[in-house]
Image (cartoon, rainbow, N blue to C red; front, side):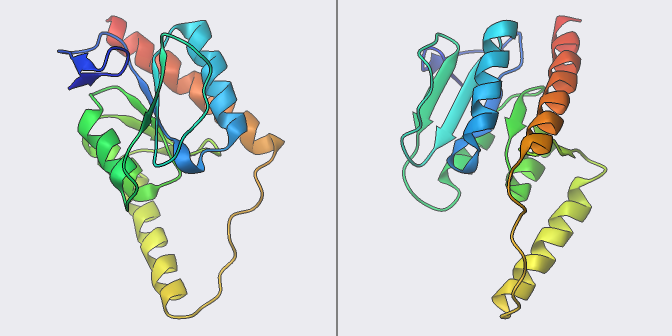
Length: 168
């Protein structure tokens, strides 16, 4: 395991880390996470295939992985530990995080957990199959203020829960 703050081996972290699948994460969400991270002193790691901007901070790390399918996802899954939080719109990544006893939430505030991830994967796979067969489907609606508020509320709930769990 690599400590995102020092890039050196570590044993077990005493607090959760927020991992962001950063390539497609809206800037508003990243800014909200940065603010929350500073207030709560929770480490954040952004993982992307391209250069991502982040404020200078001892608790915010940006990691650029090689370009390629699922490279960022694979890196995140290799590094996460129990009780970490993964921010992603990628349903398969969310499923992999849940399998490692982590929490995953989408950028619109949707909680991915053991009770919902199976149906979300099935829906994703069906839609992918329909699109590959030539069916035109609608993309996601534009990201708006209600989405940001839903995400902020979910982030606060999850971090409160995770911080309590790691302090017990």
